[in-house]
Length: 492
Image (cartoon, rainbow, N blue to C red; front, side):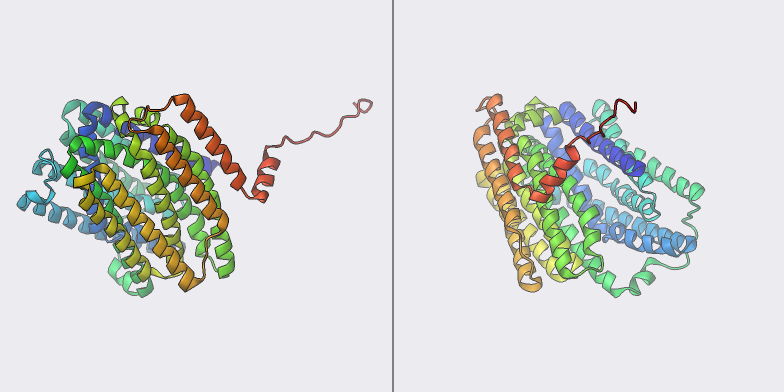
């Protein structure tokens, strides 16, 4: 219990650090600065993902298995993956910097995205990849608290860099200071691993390539995961560049604010899918039990999403003012549709995990690429005529098509069907988001705050009718105070 509490507190601190970073940038640099930073951040993530070949994700599997064999095997796996990832990330950075230097027009969505700024930012790619790998080293060694502490440390360095950079030199200073702090943090972690866990980067008996060749099934899954994750990274970069190129940096800043808010809602519940459901799906259980567990998890996930999403969608002006500043309230009408998109993505992610656990990785890769590719293409096609609304419509249509394709594949090939209760909750949340969009209007202030608060409370209360009977009984028993035994006064 102490471990779980510590992990939860550190993850909460990491979220607070991320919020502080965005808050500092939005206040100090305004919507234009936030739009540029959001686009550059996603560019870094895309380059890191494309160059890393999904090694940080797969390293966790290999290192956990090596740790169970012995210290020497664990050290070999750690050193091998570190060397391979360092080489790949540096090579990816060199390629990206070369492309930008020779063809600056490739990423010329805005004149403020100068070659010098992008080069400074791209130098953070290796530390971004290595930070994720080092976090997985602690996780593989069953040091979950240390892994969570490193995640907080990485988020804190970004927040500190934003505070210093915004007050001293602008966006370029933010990424230059971030580079120095992240390099220092990586070196400190390497020294800690060597001193406390006796892990050395100089001692390695075989390469990662040798280990991968011995497990061709893992290689196939790794390739599918790499292609899918790369498609997601590129697809999240495309709408930012579309808005930045056609609507300008200020509109890109407003879009970045609502997009990051919607993504934050989904990030927490996606973590629940990966940490709770995925290990269950990979156990040696009958398929019927797995499907039953999926139904129960999906209902709980949807209820939690509704409780979090409906008040945010109903009060976007308040949320954006708290997270960013009052200048971002004009982006309020976009938040409810993007939360609806995140709802579709969340359910699609659940089905992705199911397909992955069933080893249907080739179809998973094809459908993921097709869905995100369609969203990116539609966004670029519609942004000139419809602005940000066109980009959001493209995201929603792509997510809806991908979700439908996932469901048809699971139903036809594996016999999975979605429970009627899950469909009803999804429909209820969507109706609530439509109501929220109507009440918010075009400015976020069209209807009184009291009316929107009351509507949010009513919609949240309505979710209670979708809670299964056994869940209601369990919750009531948990909340009911325990009865004390009767006291005999004479015995006292």
